[in-house]
Amino acid sequence: MKKYYTRACNFFYGSNSKKLVKKRLSLPLCGDGSISFDQIEIFSRENNKINSKIINIKNIYKLPLEEKKKISKDLKKITSKRKLLRKNNHMIMGILNMTPDSFSDGGKFNSFQKAFQRIKEMKKAGAEIIDIGGESTRPGSQIISEKKELNRVKKIISEFKKKFPKTKLSIDTRKSLVMEFSMRNKVDIINDVSCFKFDPKSFSLIKNKDLWKIIHHMQGTPQTMQINPSYNHVLLDIYDFFETEIKKFSECKNKNKIILDPGIGFGKNLKHNLMILNKISIFHSLGFPILIGTSRKKFINQISGEYDTKERIGGTLSSIIFSFSQGIRIFRVHNVAEVKQGLLIFESILNK
Image (cartoon, rainbow, N blue to C red; front, side):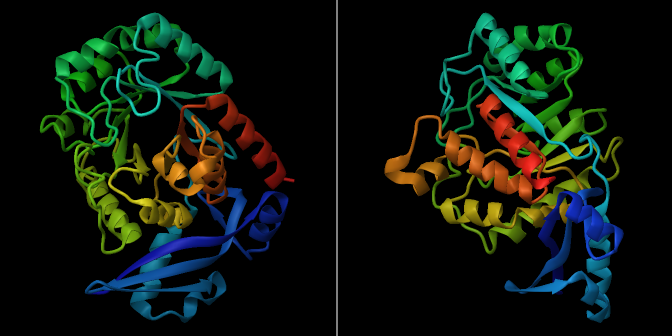
């Protein structure tokens, strides 16, 4: 059976976008008139044979009936407003690794005092979400016990909402014990890179809870994910994965509290990562907010080579700004201040 996928493309911004939307010459992306589009790329897949074409939205009526039905459904999701985000804005998720072995900042913030100070710095710099993790999931990292992981984050989690009541708290964990403790302490977001598969108790624990769940794509495990990752078509395979996981929440309470993360660097090579970023707007047709985590990732080094830098701020920011131009609005980063500044400037230029 042939399956169709819809990607919004050819974007307009700011006052020009609003004028085009008003004249019905473009469609608003995610209910936001300040970014709109007048073309779509349609992918079709049948028996692993994949084709794509780009058409103007005014020509959708010319499509064959079944294709037109699917594209019309996708367009309703692409143009619908997103929860969590305010109109015309972005959200920065600041990373706090309380680990000795994370790939970029392991050991820097693994005491309560250092972690608390780091949260204050990121919050002041513009982070609206703080993502706290007690276990590294970098390529090749080793699994630690749930008790050891909980002990690393327990104190900061229990104090977080007392100190920062208006800041959203996210817990980066694969363990139900850590999730359960975090929920008792008013966590807002569960960020499980295994998509609630590592711990058999985790999905049933969180599925009906009134909190946001990140559906994160990863091929393999942190121990194996970078050993020759392969896909039929990385973009469409991740899309199908998202569809399957979203359906699991369809009968649950708070089924719309979902954020999608395609998992840059989690079981992907350079070609895969660039394809995801280049066509990232395809995931808007699933109807949920999208998060991107490119901060300091290896693909930046693979491209920049001898021009690589320790914190990879340039590569991080360029990938984030491109993603922003494609309608992505949640960014998980280490360097909050630099990313916030870059987004504010870029957003101001676009909206003129």
